[in-house]
Amino acid sequence: MSNTPDLPWIPARRTAPARAADWVRGFSVGQVAVATPFLLAPMSGVTDTAFRVTVLEASGAASVGLLTTEFLSVELLTSGHMATRMRMAFAPELERPLSVQLFGGDPGRMAEAARHVEAAGAQVVDINCGCPAPKVVRRGGGAELMRDPSHLARLVEAAATAVDIPVTVKLRSGWDDSQRNVVEVAQLAERAGAAMISVHGRSRAQRYAGAPDWDLVDEVARAVRVPVVGSGDLVAAEQALARLRHTQAAGVMIGRAAIMNPWIFGQIQDLIAGRAPRVPGSAARVALVEAFAERLSHTLPEGAIAGRLKQLLARLSKGVPGGGLLRSVALRATTHEALLAHVRAFFEAAELGETARWAETTRLQLERVG
Ligand SMILES: Cc1cc2nc3c(=O)[nH]c(=O)nc-3n(C[C@H](O)[C@H](O)[C@H](O)COP(=O)(O)O)c2cc1C
Image (cartoon, rainbow, N blue to C red; front, side, top):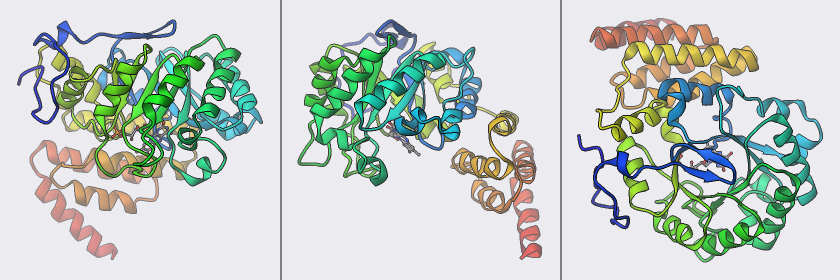
């Protein structure tokens, strides 16, 4: 496999040597070094410390340039809401550099929350300007800020004045098709003090539908001097590298693909080094799910652990022969131990090439239970 594949549907813009190792570079966000340009995207309900550490263990600590938390409400964080404080938890020795993402519409609260983040020891504060959820938008945060760029600039300025660590923003392409103003918003955010700009190339109206606009990511990257990071639909290691090569973006973010394939960042590093990307075997998959469950047990009650494992498994077993049946038995499990037992049985059978036998036995068991 070539280590810098040219995907025909991405127009070539960057003149780059053929070997990825010769052109893949880290960058700086203010004073923070991002050693490799592949970042883990923030995902609410997913990218807590247990998930982030799982990705680092699967891919290798040096394979992710910057980790970002789920988004946290500035109101809840500054009013001492325990669950929100817990969601800011991280493993400081492993998760470096770490960005904590905040959402909210009040500059005073944003500044105060940024100070909390700095005091907690994170390296970067990110302001969410892309969340499409009505409950966030109604309160003047998330994607609503794309409609009010001067207010967005006030929020950035308030946070940037309050802390010494860099403040960054994550934008969408605009509110809807008629207002794709991300270039103008990015320029304003930069002037207000943003040290990095991430762009998910879809509008708020698109939510997650349709194709992300990577040309717009490229346009933003050409319009500002701070690093720009593109996000949207990077599903494979080869594609992430190709996207980086063919835009002026300093980096790219991977979100959903990291749930399906927590090894993806390591696979990118394999490609850069000219190696065949690692393919996790059954034992590695079982070990990953077990370690994830163990980490979740430090922060979540039993009921919530099974839910999070199902979420991971739903994606991890995609495309694996027999994965559909595994998902349906796992969904019925009421404890995380029962769920892990299904995972072990399934992947052990897969290792021995006996998935068909596992499926037959499992179907019989399901019929018996009704
Ligand atoms: C379940 C889920 C939760 C998300 N939560 C956040 C969030 O808290 N903050 C944010 O800026 N973006 C959030 N996003 C958007 C992602 O960061 C990313 O920009 C988007 O999913 C496109 O990238 P992908 O195709 O690699 O997933 C979320 C996306 C998903 C799927």
